[in-house]
Image 1 (cartoon, one colour):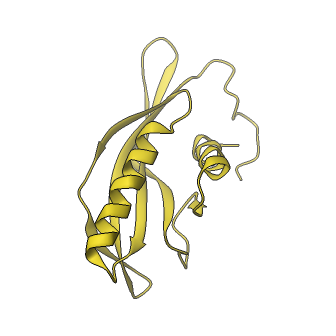
Image 2: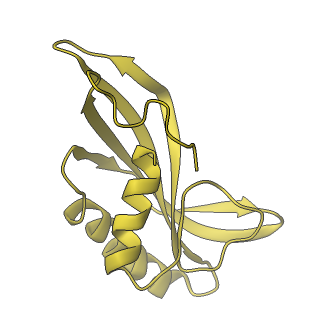
Length: 128
């Protein structure tokens, strides 16, 4: 397992929307998408690495007012449902985004994950 797949599994267990661990060819909206951010991984002090991720709350853009309200709820879901080791940094305002020729409304959230690098639980594991 990886930090982002662990987070996706956590959200899937409590959310009633699809959660994607990366951008896919097709999105079933509403949904949440988790992707690496820049810089992705940085070493820290005391054997702690910091990893940065973007989480997108995505809805259809057909009804802008209700889309914005739904994005607001999703951003607060993301903020308040992070497991241990994860931190919410910020959320950008709703914006139209195009993916595979379809326009969506999305809100981008910046997240960080910190883990101890000694005895790395992901070392030698599968990268699913």
